[in-house]
Image (cartoon, rainbow, N blue to C red; front, side, top):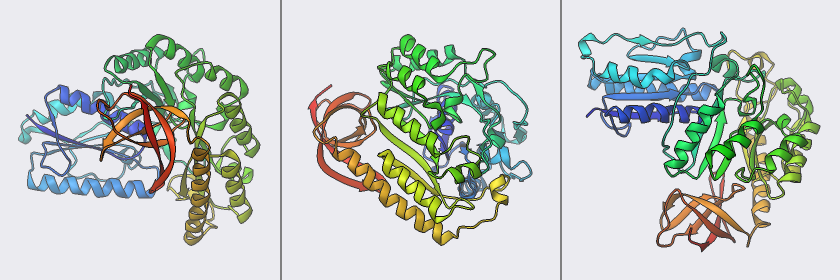
Length: 444
């Protein structure tokens, strides 16, 4: 039995795609091993959103190449945004290059390649031009590494924000057919999954490329009706999606959980314009108000960038006030990092590295206070928590509105099942994650 190691860098879409390839390879007879072991196949799915993500991809690839030096018959597959974007780079020692195309064929290709005698193997480059219009490439998932299963519903992005490299390596929006999504979610439900996360490169753009355009609400209404899945979450969504009609329709679907991750990026209308975002501060505030109107107990999380070229102290203060006014539960804060190939990389870099670090630290403290206040107001409330891990005698998992809880485990508690938990006063921080203690009030 051949051993295969799988390593994923980057977003949930990458994680989903790796899991699909992994599932097929294990079905074909491969045995999964840790990347530190000597394996017959190393599968590396990469990110290239920032220079740091490319550095990590290169570092990991070098580690695998050293393994190959010890055993020349080892096969290395490199795919994802790094090789898709860096077409001129030489990838000596890599056996199969896949970029972001033909990932649905990778498992079959790798099975044949690994079963071919090493003396007859010829390096393969499966990369294609992603800029040309293309159809959605199907991949299928039956099981997930996690208690929550990611389900990819679309690929590509049409926004071309000034700082973002993704459309250049993922192409234009292409949506997965609703029937294929229903089928996959139903399979996951039948295999014991209670919760799915609908994700994509621009999740909210699902259906906009169909000959008869549809929207995300159409999909979720039908998905809840056809699949019978108990809990539905979403990947990152733009605030422009959350108008009154969208929120009203979504709130009528019992399976939709009251947690939304907003791709805000800044609280300053001026910086949002420089970023090429197609909304301003007032639209952000409108989206947040609409969510709270229809989901009063909603937990909101958001992405924010500090130190974008041209960001002034006043612009940064706008981001601070947005976090405070929005009552955010989780805030993911990033210092601006210029990505070669984007318009923002050509802009004058007006914010020093030291100032970026300072602003990130300040915003993080404010975000922590916001998250603490959010959870404090819910002490004593009862929630249904999906058990995602059991560690050191405690059950770890998220409430419907995405409060991370740590609850003393009881006999019979199982990963992947939901349990009623009452939140208690105690809180701890692990890096940027707040953990709220709870008490199990109903087993199952």
